[in-house]
Image (cartoon, rainbow, N blue to C red):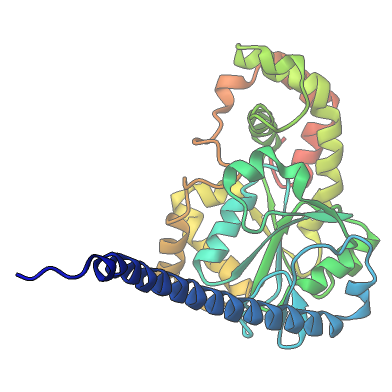
Length: 330
């Protein structure tokens, strides 16, 4: 075969390289055009969000600590993107360690929208899009100081929040238009569960009681340090139990197979959802003993922790009287 002249042969690789470079630049150009398109879409979305924010009521825009995500539902700002028009705006208020997030999981199971917000008297903790580990260990990072009366306005139909809110004239006004479900627990068990909860990494302050291995001794030291303040907190919340229009539930009944379905059915009805008893039973059974932010893996066994010393402290700080207010024997 006749060879090409050397000068021409040398130019063939160069031409091939030029073609390859042209193809590479063409691909880069396509990528740049796509990136420019995506950027333009994001700019349009940002402009739309700004326009929506301008439509927010003044009570949202003027709040100094309103730097948290909000959604627009039917022209109104909201903690969550979705709502269910036929269901009520609901707040689950509990004595701490009384199944707060168990009830929340049940409401979510039957179709209500979880806002991911934990309310209190002066603000909320924004747990939206957070893992259980983040909620346990980094909760201080998610704290927002925000007026309760404004926070509940961010609850739309079919949405719910949970929390621990004191019972007083202001909070009664703030929650006047909200469906309130109140959950209590026998206080000895609640205190044991609180101690176990505060023993977790990231919860509570560094205290000597955390290093005590013996359960009964650890509880006595915990109650000596924290019991009186905790009982005062519980007492401030307890008034919701008998308030007109509030559904009051005992945590123990949710854990008892004979009563669980009836309680679950009543909660659903108060939220505006009409389901069968079998559907309520299936939903509540589906969330019992499932991981939540406060679930420790098992229910506290009082006999493993309680002692005469613990009982003496409990009685001295008014535990028996408060238990009676909550509907327990002593």
